[in-house]
Length: 321
Image: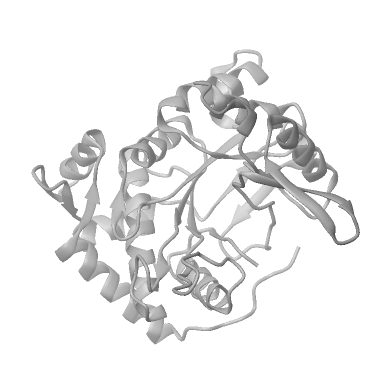
């Protein structure tokens, strides 16, 4: 494990991003598509327009929520020795990338063919992650394409890793399935609900919809993760030049507003609920119409994101290479 020492933004620049973000949240607001979430914001003193679904979040609400958010938490696995500390200012941890829909089978040097990913691939990737000492937890790696159309596809995608890795599983979550995820944790602890709440072997991840919208599904993931005490990764996927300003500073403000809006919802639901300040934000490739996760811009964005997470004393998660 390593510690972050690189610095991109000065303290004054971080303050400027913070001020701009508070202005966006309070004056423009975020579109919140879930009725329960809007009621939670409204009860806390936010201005809610039920016709447009826009929620304006005053600065004092954001500051209070941030004061409640923990500076760290543990990711529990089936094996106690595989527990990982996630902490503001702590050591850097690693997980595999996700969520893919294709696999590449190598036939011989320089020759390969691609195919849709399957549940068997999930099993094999989870085993590799379990073996690799430098990977600290497992993220939903690929889709079970062989189960497309099956109502329980996502459940298969999240239960299969349980049997194949002893590390914590970061779930690409579906809101209506949150009670089922919790039942899986309870089953692991022999039906002990208290132990399941105390040491969840699942953590959750999901994304706002850039720019400045949180859909019903992710609202429910945030709300229920807080109630089940499952760590939740509020991960913006803004694309500079696509769904956010082409200037990277403007993208960081958009990103910051989306993530803070999600963290506020978490803390309004259950103060002290474990959350990540997350990012898979990158630049939009205008020529190819893609979101490159290996572009130079994502390195700059991720560095800025880590520093903004540190500015708020929050554990931070960034994606890409």
